[in-house]
Image (tube, rainbow, N blue to C red; front, top):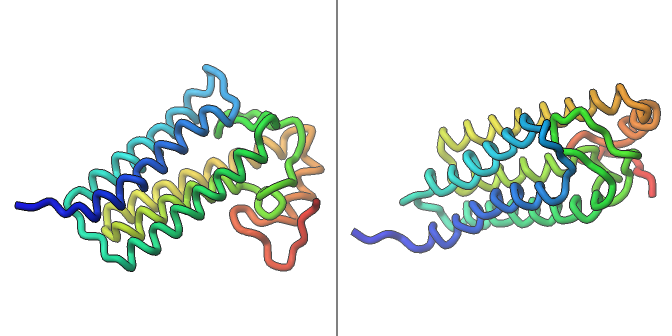
Length: 190
């Protein structure tokens, strides 16, 4: 019995993408020991459903070349967006999800000029890459679970900002930008 090398070579970097989110996020976003919920959900999402899920569902899977190309494009877009997010929020005191904390100011630079939650969008793109590579019902369930998780995280962040001293500024920013994608016809600020 032979084990096809192509899916392994392709799926391993996809699995590492999720692990990268976990490690890089720990170095990018502020957190305290009390942030167990956000840290635990991130670990479950990226390590279990992302990294291990890709390896588990990809074991002995067949990945057609067209699916691999689409998946690779989504994965590269995800990593590029996440890198842009990390460079933008460095030193801005962005906190881990579900912490209830807010940064010192509303960020309208980098990808935040176009969308309010580009980090969560980058995560969803990575899970879309997983689904494109492995179009199976269990992977669709993983994708939908993570989309729901990150939408909830984004809404929680917005509730925290709406109840902070940044509420007015954030409300104006919210009217100009989309949640995960740029708002068509809207103009960001510089």
